[in-house]
Length: 396
Image 1 (cartoon, one colour):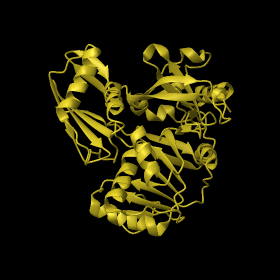
Image 2 (spheres, one colour):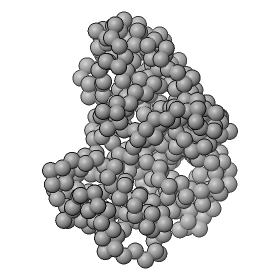
Image 3 (cartoon, one colour):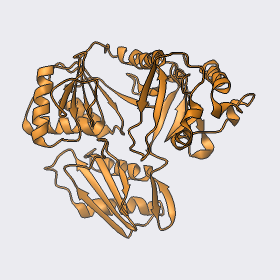
Image 4 (tube, one colour):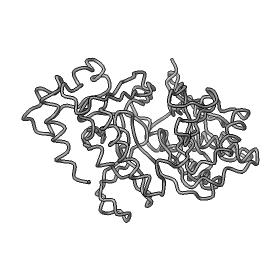
């Protein structure tokens, strides 16, 4: 379903009748509806919960809290299952089915898993092996890779930074990855061209797909075999505001228990394109995400820039260095900037002075001047408490 107009109005009609927050939304045009976000919902979460619940069995999910704020989302159990089925419809296109064995990673112990300990867990259905992404030193990776080999998963579901650590370990230890892997799904972080290349080399050109989702909605967009990210129009509706740096807002079309209408995740889009221009046959719109989040703001001499500036700088460096840099991390402390680069080849002769010069040259062409810039090569980038790579951090 690519036309979501009827579905979004159905959700709105239900919310107006049954949710305190939306009671004054009746009769308003869709374009005039106010936007909401996590902070707004958290002020009065009960105002967003429907008095008429379509399903007496309730499922609760929670956001990871990487933004500093946790949000609990309540679904009817049947709604949640239907929402997940729209994701499985995308995976099935790659020959992946719910019963297939897969490998993922966790930050905290999950009660749905029964296996060994906090390092490696196996779910009750025994088709999922999960390893702890907080502990990624070589001694742990050796253990994980041994367990993955024994488990023989058909597919992997990982964050790009975690998948990259696996690739690095397989390469340096000269260990063969399991030949059973036929598909890789990446989610939760920016997927760079360099990481795609590493995954292809490590896993024998296994097909891969980028999955853009959130706990509030499940799958929002999914990459097709043509390399385009199609909006999951059976599950969500997306509105883009060109006047706000292409910030976009998501409406959950499945959750009538806790309707979220025109909700901001803090992400922005480069563009949204008609789906019928893609050769894969999916008619849903194609979402081109902007790198970085609206909350990632950089202050340079009083001028405010968003974090996509650094993605641009690294892209320019990769043009010069043949996609050498897989990921990066930037720290700002007052007027000092430190850029940490993770190369795919530790033996490559890298002249730091030349890299700093190229970065300054690119910035200067944009009218930006950094007096205190330091570039370093790193073998390991810092992960957050939830195991995600945050690309930019302001240090107090």
